[in-house]
Length: 252
Image (cartoon, rainbow, N blue to C red; front, side, top):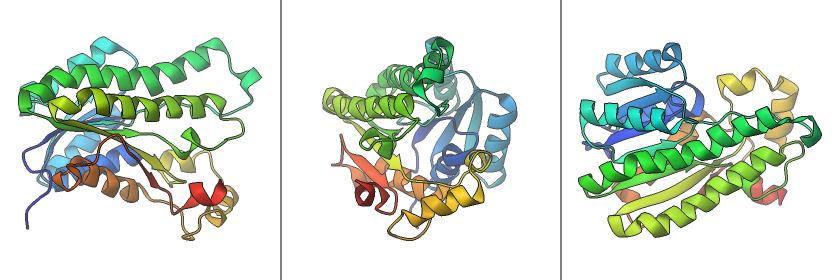
């Protein structure tokens, strides 16, 4: 059976855990060589080791997506290892929910630096490589909060709306270079990180809002990320795919 991403090289930010790691593992199973960019080696390296143990190709890349030079350095290191990047997944995010008046300049600045500037640095870092390779695919992880209201999530919603808007504009700007750009809006998805802040009662309240009757799993988001990076989506660009069991539109 052919693998849908055979011969591709993917850079996944925040790829060491949660949704990012599920995407890393799915891409590797589909034949891509993967660069796992995360803030800490103790997070990125085990993810890379797991891919290699399963017979895939992966490299751990330590860096802060909020810092442009570190994103560029990671992209260069990935190219040196496996060749030009042809897939980028902008997944990394740092977020704190709460009343807006409780969020100071440092907190808001960090959310913007990681959640939005990191996306822009990702674009800039991989564009030359994708052009040399003859094209590529970019998948941004946005959120349903880009289009619906979220109490105590003003900054998160604003950042994810900016990510979604950048996806549309980037699709128009990069399209002539055969580079597709799409976003995924994951619904309530159980990850280890989310389990640390959401109680079982909280998960049940979220599940009750989902028309399909279940919460998301990281693999659900990874499946969509594989599709959008593959040739099966070769005429899809500038879109945002809601992977949420119809929660967003039932809510709205």
